[in-house]
Every structure is written in C-alpha cells, then in structure tokens.
View (cartoon, rainbow, N blue to C red):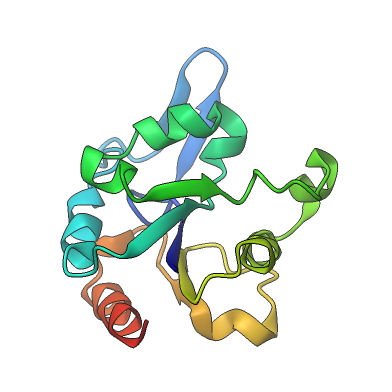
Length: 159
C-alpha cells in the first residue's frame, strides 16, 4: 500500500484559515478560496492510481471524518482510506497535544504501508527519522508552488 498523508490548510488552499462559531471556517485573505489548488493534486496523482490518501488535516478533528472527506472531489474521495485522528490506541487528549509529524508516524506504525509521504505546511515536531518523507509547503502557496509540485512528482516516482 502507498499512502499520501494529506493536510488541507497551506496545501490545497492558503494556510491562513480561521474558525469562528458564527462564521464557520474562513480564509483571512479574501482573494483566496478554499481548495483552489485541489486540481493540482488531482493532476499530480493521476498517473499513480494506487496511491491512497489518509487525511492528516485538523479539519477531521473540527468537522468530523465524513464531512472533511466530502470537501474533496470525487476523484480524491475514492482514494481516502482514513485519517490520522482515528487511532485506536490514542486518547483524544494525547492526540491533541501531539505534533503533526508524530500523529502521522503513529498512523504509519498502525497501517504499515509499503511506502508513504506527507504534504504539509506544519513541520513543527516532525521526527528526524521520517523527515525525508515530508514535503513542506509554503502556507501561502501550497501546491501552487512549482518547486513543491516537482517535489511531489519526485516523491511519487520514488514510491
């Protein structure tokens, strides 16, 4: 099994996302839109139909797995096999204080994929032993950045 651990904020759209009880989720930059770079991910993954997606985004924690998965296009939804939040051996309180990289590493340990990588703008606390599996995005550019797209292509080819 080949897995992409996918974050949303700073990857599929601008990273400056806020959440308000009345307003819901919104981007602080009014010139940006949610999921504006999703077609880029679809294009990058198209030659690799065997790559599955595990949602590593905080959206799962805020909105729930099903609602978060529904935000993706049908093409990407069919690849989603779970989320890092659904870990049977972790308490919710433990998960909440764990850096993203450790959340992903715990999922890797559970799923035991043949190969994997993550696309994320949150690099805080990533374990040194798997840092080479992380494609770090710039939060304001996400997948719209050509260098990031090249890094994803190289990672996919290496899988």
